Amino acid sequence: MEVKVIHLIHELINWFLPIVSKYPRNFRYTLGTRLEEHLFHLLENCILAQYSKKKVYYLNKANMNIELSRHFIRISHTQKIITVKQYEAFSRQLHQIGKQVGGWKKESEKKTCEGSWDKLTLVSND
Image 1 (cartoon, helix red, strand yellow):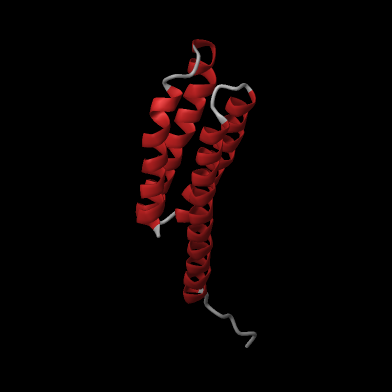
Image 2 (spheres, rainbow, N blue to C red):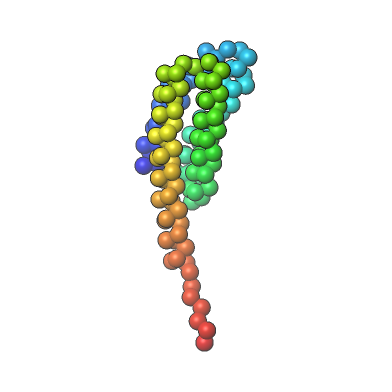
């Protein structure tokens, strides 16, 4: 699952970079840069989650990147910087990534809970 979501993020970034490079100057270095940064942080957080024992921590950060990207792309659409078609394509891909990250997080939380039961020692009242 982890590799698939990372691949989806790569696809989204590669698709979006040429679009953001065409943002008008007054939005390119504010809105465009912020959106790019959140997409790259999303990729970084998912890669860190893949190799870290603190998976849930990084996946929570990835979820925040997804949510912020949603808002920034919505503003881009509202300001008529991107087309409806581009907005829909970005939103669909980001939704798919969000589902993957959410599933990965649930799975990781389950494993964390199961692992904590193994370490639990019972204390008797003797």
